[in-house]
Amino acid sequence: MDQSNAARKPEPDLASTKRDPEEESVHRALEGFYRTGKPPWDTGVTPPELVALVEGRGALPPGRALELGCGTGTNAVYLARHGWEVTAVDLIGRAVDQAGKKAAAAGAAVRFLHGDATRLDELDVPGPFDLFFDLSCYCGIPLHRRDAYAAGLTHRADPGARLLMFGYGPEPLGNPIPKITSWAAGVTADELRARFPGWELLDVTPGTNPVPTFWFTLRRNA
Image (cartoon, rainbow, N blue to C red; front, side, top):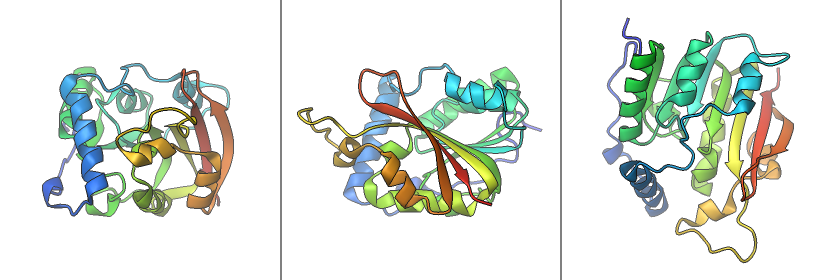
């Protein structure tokens, strides 16, 4: 078995996917971060919040995990090396290519897919999953595509599944508005409660960043 991309199947042509101007702007902006080698969310270090969920007191037993916006694969590799069966999705092909190389070098079995986290039905991602991990993916999605993201995860979630999400909060008043307007909206606990019916918001922990950030933990109802 290919350790980094077991049974990798043909993926949809993202260029042919109908995206509106805001989605195109997000795609270009993300590509720019990876082209310059400076995506601020892709530090190469697995965050302690994920480590605690996997290794800490009351850790989840290994199962099936889906990472949304996997970047260059640091956290997907971490999960695989701790016994999880991992599928990981990213919108940017350059990131997926780097992730595959990272997993191969680590001897970790991860299934990487180049695709849109709001269009999982277009990918071979049947689920169900016990854990979803999102490091700054959801908060970068245009507002009008966030319901599709939530529906895709809900459809693939086992009862009791967890979603661990890191996101930027709304831009403080007086800050310059980002060129992508939905990025200024960030993500809030109230929004997640509204967009994820059938899930319970278990925890909201502020991040340690100089700008408002949060770790959200949700659990799919039985």
